[in-house]
Length: 69
Image (cartoon, rainbow, N blue to C red; front, side, top):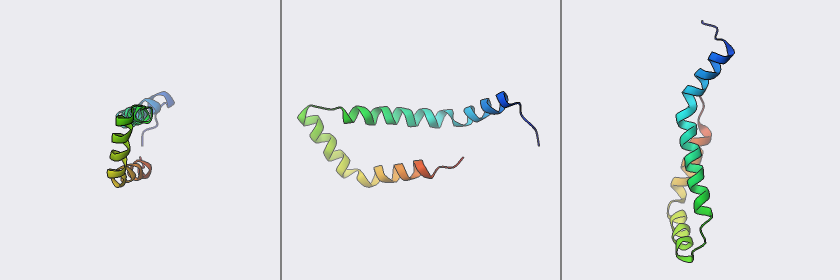
């Protein structure tokens, strides 16, 4: 087994997780923007979407939290 310098180990760790982390951050930002909607039509559409997609959204969070690297 190879022993890595801490700097190299961190860079390897970061490289393995960067794409997934970036996608989670982007999704979080989109979700946050949905929460900032104020126009009544946009709010109504968002709320309807959330009701219709509630199971898929819930499963998405479960898989996110179940991930183990």
